[in-house]
Image (tube, rainbow, N blue to C red; front, side):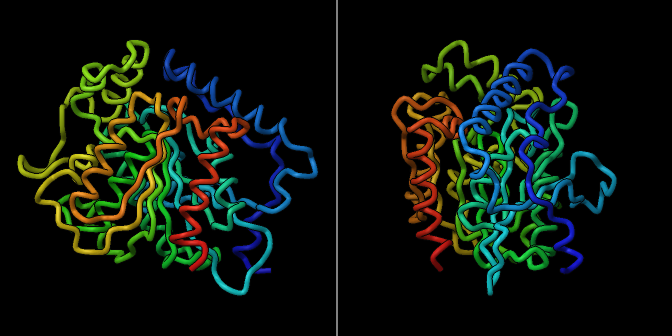
Length: 343
């Protein structure tokens, strides 16, 4: 057994965190965390003990930052199938959601498990959260985690030539911004470091993404229910504060708004754009962001598709016992098989 292998442990789901430290994050954080706690518990109860985690293992809380080597935020978990293979497995980097201000890799462990069970080595990433750590801190962390993955993936049996970026909600924003940094050289230092890795993902899976945080009131203008607006405003203020956009120049959209980056007429990728699948609930207030993203990709001849799931609300795929969520997971698996798993 190698030194790397000793990091991995069989997964006891009773040890998995279902509620992070939320009290100081306010009423909205309490509601979101409570919801994910419930989903975690239901997901644990729905399977027989003999079905749980028998095929995956996890190495937890690995530090990925050279600039914050002792930071509690800059940690990732690595999930992988227990069965050994004669060749490296495809790699998948997963970034959790939570409105840029709450949740963690621990609340989203069942996303990482699901992808590992598909046959991926999954790198599930934590990052600094707002409002204490606004943009660009979360994206800086995600970019640094990406660099760490490119340097250490092989040690963990992962194949960088078959790399997927996946994220949910705010995490979808972050992986879309990260993908833009892999495709074209930008002025931000953290983005340049990503571009310099020369590693480009093969596929993108941004789920229920909030792809533009500036002009957050556009959701109200487009008919989003009033009850959703406080959480959306909170997400925007947590990420960019009261600044409408933090672009490096008037001519260049900010990576805090990756949708505007892909919509920008001057955006000319220097590398092959990954295939993209953006599943979203038909009843999600954020649905128009996914539709705009697909239109922007197709207008430039890039590969992109979305699927609207009738009756699905925000992050509906997290309710894994629900038939609608299960259909979404089947569709995501089919997309990944087409572009990554069967290569």
